[in-house]
Length: 313
Image (cartoon, rainbow, N blue to C red; front, top):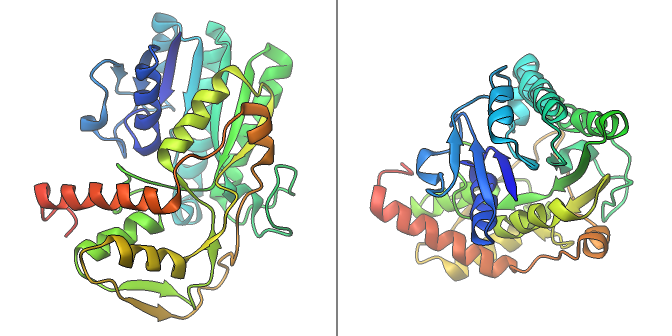
């Protein structure tokens, strides 16, 4: 099977590429390398350095004729969507429509779309199920949800099958703490520099932390199942920042300390997923425990720090 991975040089996309090639699929990567890294391009994958908003992507689709498109490219920063909503919408909405048009014109069979927990806003019930009301608190949440509606339309009008995966808090190796970094990679950045961690409030706020290789596996599973469906991708477990710090103290050879500040206005206090639907329909469940994932991630950053210091300074 030929699969086109959009954002395949990035944090999550590169892991998807690895797993696809390991199982014998032919893979093409499209990435503009704005956040993806050239050294994360798989040597056995084809590569096009293109932005998803470019009209030239149709040429790639016509030449390569992918059967499946896995879309991981996005503007992911909430603050950017606040300061520059036009930029955010152009990439996340218009860029995705550009991809969908290329899919329509070249008869792509399946489109797997990476969405986000941000579309739910402040949870009105926990755990969050896929039928939770959509009430995004930022332009980013809006721009991630809008393509979901377009996918439904393209399926109805043009018979383009799709599966939507709404990610929890993804972490793991290859995440850039200075770019796309989530709280775990940012914390590891500080720990390796022997700097205190900064916590907003009492540290009891919780999230659903999911290891990147498990997220990649969910994308692979979605290629063949879940047509027309939406799935939460997480662990179904809520973990507090204080619990994270406790694990860091166990796995780190460096001292770990934290400074607690004031609560940040507007922050969501608790968020975690119900993953029953994806377990049932895609036969997927997370395999990497938080402790194992944090150990893997810590070792990765520790080695990277040794090799390329002052990489994280």
